[in-house]
Length: 595
Image (cartoon, rainbow, N blue to C red; front, top):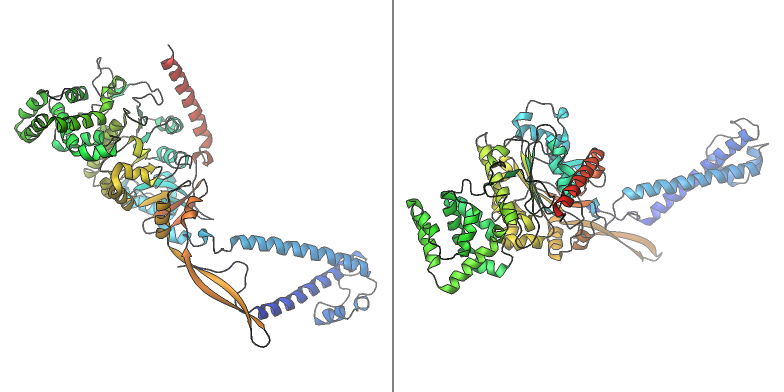
């Protein structure tokens, strides 16, 4: 625990300091007078050696008014003028020097003074991060540390404040960022992470900015961009589709896919009451469609026709799914009120399946001319998958979550066949995760994804957003499993502020008091230590735009300066690429919206 002392108050008794200051002041003034005398002697045509050397003789003579005798022929007015100039210059230097020093001295109310130093965040500094990258990635093991490009070693976080090194998360860190709108969450975290990814990368968004800033640079060389844009966020031309039911031939896969839909039921009360039963219903329908080669179109038709015997017959034709067949039949034959509650809840969660513009991205194309997206091949590439959706009811959010989840699980399988870790690693930037990419067991996945080289970066606007999706226990689990946590500016959540204040901890602040005592009324000084929070809740709220609080496993809490892409070395290239992408987007939008 670091102790902060008052910035401008000396320690100990005042009297000794006054004595030392007085003697030093007399000595300094005497030295200035001697220098003024020598300079005046030269200016008046005499030798530099005119007069006595500096010492007690000179000061004594000066105090007795014998300047004229010590410096014959040197005008007194000239000595006084030079002395005044030197004194003014000395005072100016002292003032400027003190201000520079004072800026570096800690204040009792300055949280930076007690937050991390470079030594206390050493695991995130370039040398350590480079060594960890060589250990985690076999492809880098034989390369010298100095030859590794920074983007190959980890995910850029920012620069330690006030004057620290660049900090990066390693290739086994999983991240959660809570950053309010316009706090650089896209420009300083999402976009740089996508651009610097050494291998495949997945990015979700509900706006065009992330896609526009990265798509051109991410398609250089042999890399490809897969843009999933069923709601025309960037008006991307559809040249591929994803068979959402491909591989959904087990109960586990069916329940995972169904869970993504039910989690998007906006009414928490309905979701809590009917959600488990609706998940069972929808998973049975999904499983029936998956094992019979049907599509999600048939799934929604079965939801509308709540008495259709077809899905039950399909499940009964496979002995291993007899339990699911009986369960589905039981739901169809249950009390009307219960049956209606389950079917309505499932239809609400899956309402995007009634939108033909969305469905054409996940159902077989009539002509068969579209490429098929294969998650297994994607995780072996260096491509980019953009998952774009609007917010709100009827959006493609359940399919966004389903595809992101499928890709992450394929990456884990790939890692398990390659020694346990994906190389190069795959960042998964889940921007607007609580709105468009709700993965039910994401908090559980966090516990092992990092060890597989799959690195989720979940970006939320508030703690409450996370609780809305995963509940209080789920959000606590996500927060606890994240090895790197970023809290940006604009956080007005008092509960989160209190939590962060406790996590950062207190420091000892020196409090100085003065008193007079004794017969001679001598002024004495006493210093006591008082504990107070390093970062009170109000300080969390007052974080400046462009800064963030960093909590990393094994490190002291730190404040960092974020580094937006427009302040980076590739700013001109990114700006030009973004402008070209926006121009193309505008052209496509005008063509799409024209009557």
